[in-house]
Length: 258
Image 1: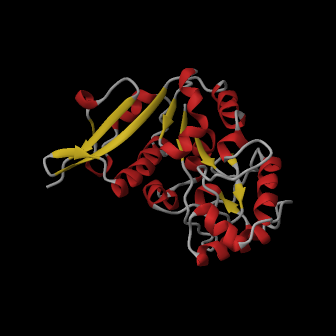
Image 2: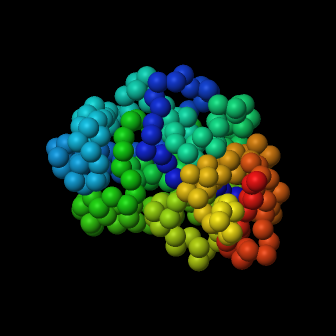
C-alpha cells in the first residue's frame, strides 16, 4: 500500500534534519531539464507564470539560478519530508518520528512534485517552487502534466508490484493527483475526505482538511498500516469514519466539535 501526498510551497532548509538517512530522487534527469527551463526565465516571467508577487518571483529566480543540477553539497539539500512545511506537514509532524517511522515512510509514502515528479520521503531536494498545475511549455507540451506524462504513474505501478496490498491511499490534492489519475483504472484508490460540522451540515474546511491529511498519513506510518481497512480506525483530532456518508472509493471522516 502506498500513501500519496502533495508537496508544500513553504520550505524549511534551516532546521537540522531529524535523521541522517537520505536517498536520491529517481527522475533527476527530468528535474534538470525543468530547472534549465526555469533558469531561462526572468523574475517577471516567473511572476506571470506562477501568479505570484514580485518578491516571491525574485526569491524563486534566485533559487533556480543557484540550483545545482549535479546535486550540490548536502548542506544545500534536505530530505523532502523534512524540507516541506505547511498545513499538511504540520499534521504529519515528522519531528516526532523515530528511525523506524522514517524507514516505514520510505517504503509506503510518496510525495508528488511538479519539479521532481515523484519523491520518496528521504530524497534530498533543493529549494524550489514549481506547482504541478503550472502551464510551463516544454518539448513535451504546454503543461507539467504533459511533461511528466506516464512517468509518475508507471513508477507507482512498479513500486506497488512489490507490495502485498497494492492499494493507494490518496491524500494528495486534486491538482497533484491529476498527474497520476489513470492509476484509478489499474488499482484500488481510496480518497479520504475530512469534513467538519458547521452551520447545520458537514463540509470541507480547507485548513482543517489539509492538516487532517497529514495527520492520517502519520497515523498510517506510526501504526504500520498496510491495508486500507486499517485507516477506518483513524480517530485523531476527533475525526471518525462515517460509513453512511462514504462510498467505495471516497471514505468520509467527520468531526463535530462543540
